[in-house]
Length: 246
Image (tube, rainbow, N blue to C red; front, top):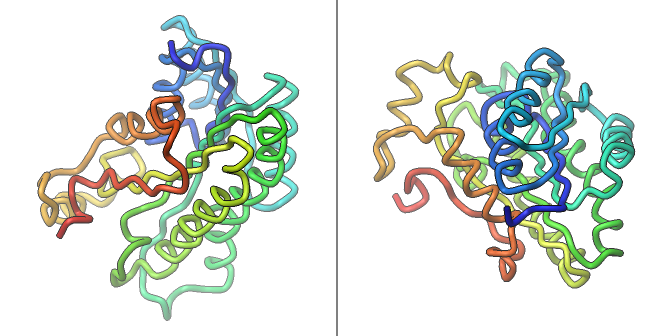
């Protein structure tokens, strides 16, 4: 129960990595606020956490711009008072050729993957800094680190989040706020189920030779949220089955 007495906000917490992260933080004693667009799935996660003895609430929100991000931060504060842990997990991951990408596609990806985390941090990090403690964990991707055909839009948006992780660590770290990221590799979730054999083939290139699970990624997120990572600032932790090594 190392997060007892703390409150966490997990965006995109209704499925996949976000859901697993919310459960993992609640298991460690945090009161968890989950945000997402699907109220049915959100309520299901809340019931799961509460049935296990944890504390959780769901906020329905469509994160897409500055206003929605700031509004979510405000609603979370109304529920829990102070947000001690922010997990920027919500994101979209479209693949496809650059020449087939529209301006609307581009704006949608950058609005959710970059703009929303930016203004959530703008709202919540200053309060963490005033209290002298806090943890922010951004969820990026291994394709933010290298070029991959068909992943220019998604990879570049997450590469922006990698740089923001380091910039925020420099900005808020001196005030006691730790900002880090996890960089998942191929992960088996409901969102990647449509990839079929492509997911396995991508995962086979790494030493682990298999896709990861959402729970494995969540363990890394939980670690970065706890005092066990007290000397970790501005790090991007690869949780990719070793793909970073090859």
